[in-house]
Image 1 (cartoon, rainbow, N blue to C red):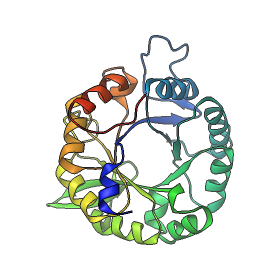
Image 2 (image 1 turned 90 degrees about the vertical axis):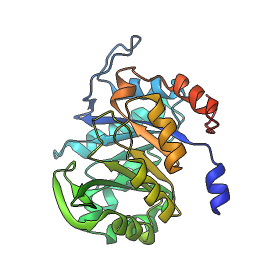
Image 3 (image 1 turned 135 degrees about the vertical axis):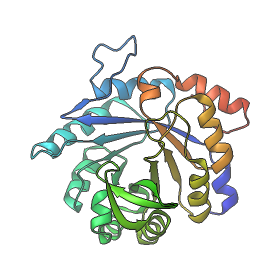
Image 4 (image 1 turned 60 degrees about the vertical axis):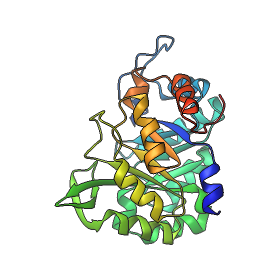
Length: 259
């Protein structure tokens, strides 16, 4: 893919759902939802609103987890026709295989890839590059962006851009980059660093961390030219509705997929 075609693709809007024990854990106030904690119903609602993709992150680590996640993936796959990625606790080929077989379009790995980078090669070889999303949590420490684990709590030795380039060379198909300094602040995405990363790689970058307004989405696409932007609470709480967001992006000459 050349840079030109890379730039012409429609930008993607991706709601992210944190799942614990098969339930979504961030509160939601969609008026027409019967059960705010049901990720399947949420997924359906987002696909109807015009979300381009969904990401589900499982934040539990129980023995029963894989079974729960496989059931969730099957249920979601029956309800929606947009691509969805599932991540959290995928440590080996068998985990990924179970989730992809259940109907997930892509799998996302984070800590497991940092601890065992060869896992990226194995997954890309087993399933194809397009199925492997590498999630990276970054924080700035003394002027350098450093990869963090455990939801941004544990610093590693790795500089973020170096790690992303290594992940790409090993077969990552996409990078989901969360700036922990911006995450939860609703003060906007880390556009400067996102641009640096996006310019350095040839695979799509998903921006995460900091969305608080429609303008933040306009800014991240205009300033960093990333392929996609992800958010959780602003969508879950109905602060931003996807049809409104896409309308404003279009008014700013940012190409997005029709609803």
